[in-house]
Amino acid sequence: MRIFPSSMKLSDQMETIISTRRFPPPQDNIQLETEYTGISAVDKGLVYLVVAFSPAALAFDKGFWLLLMHFLVSFAPVVGVWAIEARRRGNGGGKWRGAARL
Image 1: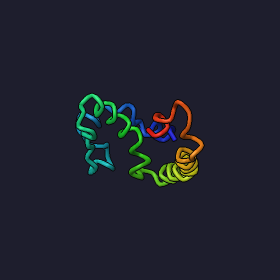
Image 2: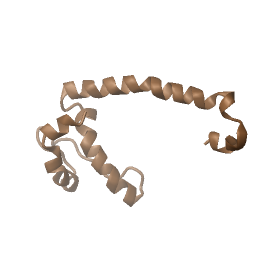
Image 3: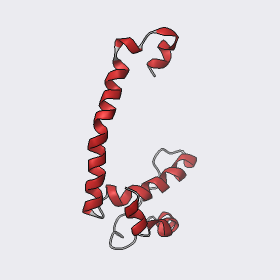
C-alpha cells in the first residue's frame, strides 16, 4: 500500500502540504486538518500519517482506494476474533484479572 504515495512524490511534497494545509493539484481543493486530539505533540505526529495515507483514504486513485478497502475487509475478521476472545470467560482468571478487562 505504500508504493502509490512514492509514485506520487508525496514524500517530497509532505512539508509543503503540511505548511500550506493543501494537497497538490488536482486535489488542491482538499484542505488538511492539523488538529485531531488537541494535544500539540500528538497532533504533529498524526498529521504526517494523515498525509501519507490520504491518497488511499480520499480515493485520489480508485485502484489504490480499492486496495485499501480490500485490506480493511481482510483485517475485519482478525479484529472480530480478537474482540470475541477478549470477552470469553476463560480469559478473565488468574492474577491478570484486572489487566484482562482493560
